[in-house]
Length: 131
Ligand code: ZN
Image 1 (spheres, rainbow, N blue to C red):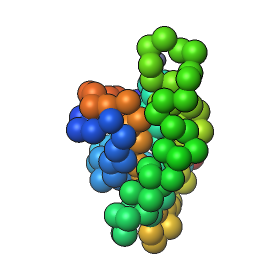
Image 2 (tube, protein in one colour; image 1 turned 60 degrees about the horizontal axis):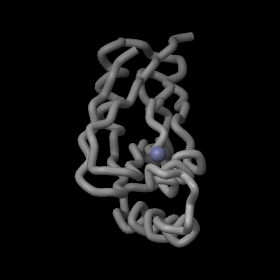
Image 3 (tube, rainbow, N blue to C red; image 1 turned 135 degrees about the vertical axis):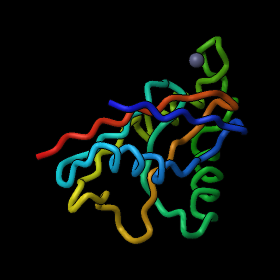
């Protein structure tokens, strides 16, 4: 397992970590298998979507804020329930197939770390299994 450090700058932010995941993959030398990208946080997530047009993650962030408002009379006293809810909606991991030493992402797909309660220093764990 490898760990990627992610430093976020905003309360809500999507950061493209595809190149960092690729670095981990190339270091292993594994040509075929699967790659799991997992974040061990309850107010963050991992998702795969388009980054060719940066308006796509911007729209996802904007529309998600309408579905899960920051303040909606939540019970959780820490005050970050919206971030916990978004973490569960997006999920904390993604799995990508590896073929010929490459992540099998679609042309427009990138792997994003999703910050919902930043800014913070975050961790992402990457596990690559050949076979
Ligand atoms: Zn909390």
